[in-house]
Picture (cartoon, rainbow, N blue to C red):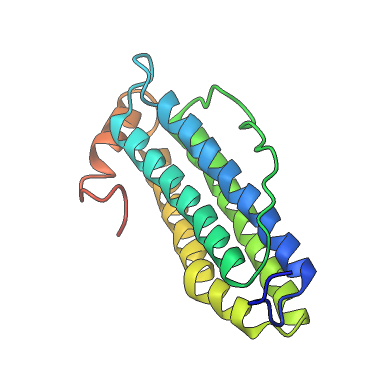
Amino acid sequence: MSIVRQNFHEECEAGINKQINMELFASYTYLSMAYYFDRDDQKLGNVSKFLKKQSDDEREHAMKLMEYQNKRGGRIVLKDVKKPDCDEWGSAVTALETALDLEKKVNQALLDLHALADSHGDKQFCDFLETHYLEEQVDSIKEFADLISQAKKCGPGLGEFMFDKNAFESGDEGSS
């Protein structure tokens, strides 16, 4: 057992490992989406860049959890990362709706992890989750919902092309 471990319940340690896997799955899924929209027969370059950035963000979330696990004296136990649910993502709207659903699942898992930490009186872990994850998840859910609304208003075909061209004009891939 690590000498730094203090008030760090084994269930919280296991929960972090489970969340690491979920964050890596989300990263893997967004990477699949990003390169789907980078294909020559799909080519929505800004959608692809946005989803690549989402993939990078999710991987960073996993790494931050790994750093925290080590800081608290826990042990990182990596599991196989499940492949994305599909390889063909259809339209931008379909992919963004899938991404929104995934963001909500990740958010719920983080809320459950927070409740677990709270049930074990782990105020440090609760603070870590609140500081680094919970608000960011709400912002991400809102960002995906806004993009879906815009994409639906544009429609398929030329509308989807215009969505790709205009929804990400600010230079930071859809952030408001």
